[in-house]
Amino acid sequence: MKIPSKTDCYRIICRSGMLDNIFIHSLQVSRVARFLADAMIRSEMVINRDIVEAAALLHDITKTKSLSTGEAHDLTGACLLDSMGYGEIANIVRQHVRLDIKPSPPFVMEGKIVHYADKRVLHDRVVTLKERHRDILARYGTDPYRRTCINENFSATKILEQLIFNTLPFTPVDIEGLMPSADFDTEQRIFESIKTGHRSREEREAILPT
Image 1: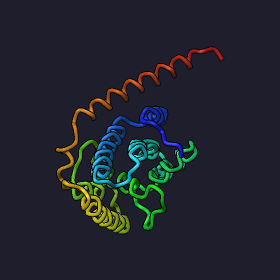
Image 2: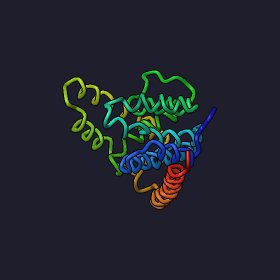
Image 3: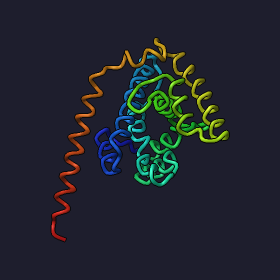
Image 4: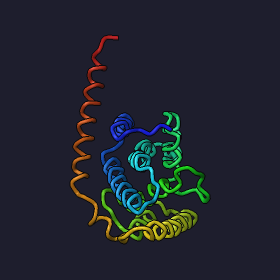
């Protein structure tokens, strides 16, 4: 099994040309997912934290491209990561928009954590499912069929929320207040350092003789 490190994830994001606002969203989703994974591990659930973190950071890896192509970024993101040898991560990324009805093991709960975390982050803010639901309906519910699909998806996510928090000593509304705020700023600085190094390498390669 091949899992990209956090540094690997940041380098993949740099190479993808991900927009800054999409990266910030992905970073927040990763914070929520990691927080939930850690809480579940403390509750003696078996969770692979590294898989959760990597899948959360990379869940929107082709989102920037999809804004111009109209592609389904959950599917193309999964294809990209699978081609890089990250099959387990790809399977979770594929389900971050809509979970499989009967997910195949392994790492079923890891996929559910990332899916749920994405539904709790609106742009760069941690919000309730209800607020995220309203936003998704306003942006993507352009016809009755899409609205029905969105409503069904969030109904399933609401059930998932109850499943997750039945095992935890806090409620969904407590998440933002319990997560350490310093880690968000730290991760942004680390990413900016890696991005600067990536740009420097590109500039050096651009002037090398061919």
